[in-house]
Image 1: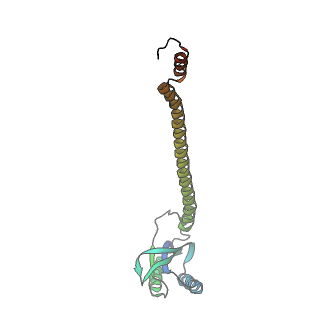
Image 2: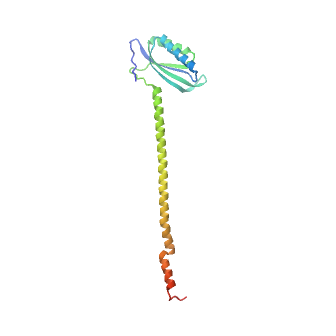
Length: 188
């Protein structure tokens, strides 16, 4: 990240934010951006950096528009020319709003458009990771339920033969029946 340090003692670095309508025809947008560059060139400003944020929603409607395109400029320029550029931008057709800020000394430029793109990539990765974790939890729950059902089925099979044997007497019953049938001493 470049550090904002003026090249001369007379110049200072200013951050300019320019907002123009979205949607705008590509040709009109290029013409407007060239006009803005010419305004700064006439003021003797030297461009240090530019960060085109692109389309963003507005906090409140401006001229019936709910979205706009933001461009952030960093210019080194004479402080006496700031008011002049401010007035020209105010009347420039196509510029909805603009803002000028004098950044503090040793200010580091952060390209928010690049940071935003990186965030989008990271966010997708985080969402994919969350989805994987959800799927893993569901698989674990399914496996746990299957084990519980298998165990219950095994228990039922163990209990069922024992219950049948105890209720009917199993082999003991068969032996007693055979003994009764074979016993000749029975008085019937």
